[in-house]
Length: 311
Ligand code: PSU
Ligand code: MN
Image (cartoon, rainbow, N blue to C red; front, side, top):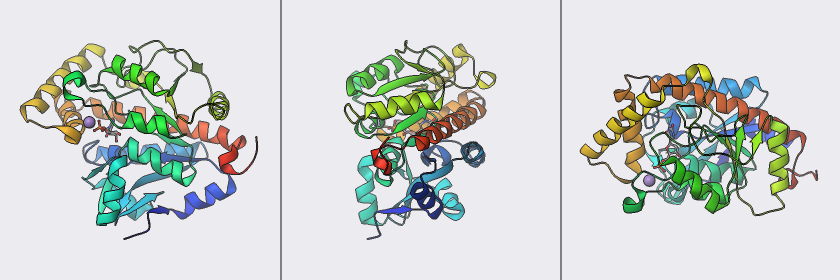
């Protein structure tokens, strides 16, 4: 069996020097998240956005059974072609089986940076409570993972086809702090506004860092920073609602279930919008990466106990 956790050299150096690092999941950059070649384009822009703010991107995934944090170029190429989705509970079996390539979701990717000492993580949208979950019980393990790990996750809310109000309620139940990035409304992924009212708004990385460090006094949950999609990339609300209905119907017709639902609906959404969701998804992921890098930079200026110094 391979070593459980491999941290790339650039990430190791950055962590040792107290420099900012932003963890990235790999599912969004595989074909389970975005069609070729948009997945590579998305990664290129996301990692450039992280570097532009002076932070180091740490792409996470599973290769040859090991959890990799900070994939190099060749490793990233392998992850982009991955088709086995790995949630937090799948990491152990993947290691035991020596799984060749596994792409990590938010839940798995949140556990890895926590283990590596990385405090900030950027993605597109987290998983949440699916519509009809009252009957199906389908609630993404992303929410539990956020509640259990002390990490700042930046996303544009939750994926558009979920039950947004129920997901928002569940975040409260789980004790996950939600901070609106320059907004007081929970963003609706492809659409800037539309979600529930937020109780806290932040304007810069320093404010998030202050909230994160202060939260260390409370229970050890994560913080979700909700960043709306850039205005020039946002889609029409009604068009998204129609496309989501079509995509869900298509997924139901094909009889997909469990962990296959999210990739199937994402792919169907590309179809039902004539590809319009792709640039929107890339733009929001890029924006989240820039915000996350700013937060990581602020946190690096105020290191917590986990990073060696006393604030
Ligand atoms: N949102 C996207 N693209 C994605 C995902 C979310 O815009 O690819 C992925 C993330 O990796 C997320 C996962 O953690 O879907 C959630 O899957 P599920 O609903 O099966 O828990
Ligand atoms: Mn599910």
